[in-house]
Length: 285
Image 1: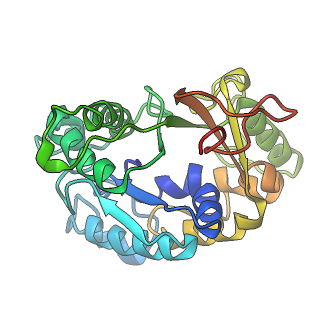
Image 2 (image 1 turned 180 degrees about the vertical axis):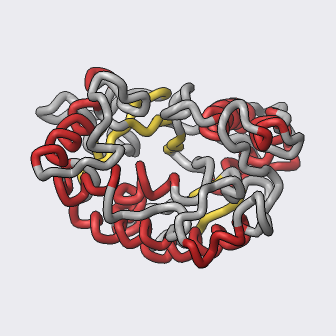
Image 3 (image 1 turned 90 degrees about the horizontal axis):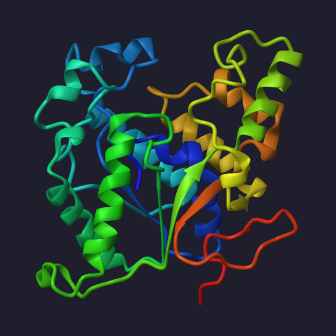
C-alpha cells in the first residue's frame, strides 16, 4: 500500500520484482495519483497542479510503465482513479482540500482496501510506519487506512457483500536503516558530491530508521536494474542521476538492491546471522 506513484519503487521495487520472478502474486495499491507532485521535466511543466492540473493522469501512465519494468501485472488505485487526491505537504492549501486523501473519511477509504484484501487474500501486507516514513500526510494516512482495513477485513460482521473475511498473517513497514543512509552520504562526500543529499546532517535524517528496529532485509541485488528502470519510468518525479538515488552508484546493492522492513504485526520467521529475517514470508506456509 503506497501513497503516490513512484513511492513503490523507492522502498520496495527490488522486493516486488524478486517476488514476481519467484511466482508470488504481487498486488500494488496506490492511494492517489500524485497530482501535487513537482514536475522535474520542463517539457511537462504545464501538467502541474497550479497550471493545467493534469499531472495525475500522466503519472498513471508512468506507474503502468514502472510496473511493466518490475513485472507487476496487478496494480490498482484505491477506490479507482482520482477517488482520493494527493494532499500535498502539511500546512499547504492542497492539504485542506476536502477531496484530499488526508481529509478522507477513514472508514470510507479503509472499506475500499477491504475489497482488495478480501479479493486477493494476501498473507503479507507492506505499508509505512505511523510517521509515514518522513511525515508526509498521505503516507501517514496510508498507514492508518492499511491497519484499519486489515482489522475490518478479518471481521466476520463487516460488510459480508465485500467477500469472506480474511486475516493477514504479517504486516511490514518499510524502513531505511540509518547506517546504510549514513554510509551513502559518506561515500558521496568522498567522491566529491555536494548536492542536497550529500550535504545532509547524518544526525538529522527524519526518514532514517534506527538499525535496531529493522527486523527484515530482503536481498534482491539481481533485480536492482529493474528497480532503477522502474524509477526512470517515473520521469516527472525522479531523477536517478543524483541526490538520494546516487546511492545506487555509491553503495550499490547494499543501498538499493537490499530493501529493509520492520515487522509490525505477526510472528517473525527464522532469523539469519544478522539477526533479521531474509524473507517477508519467513515462517509462513
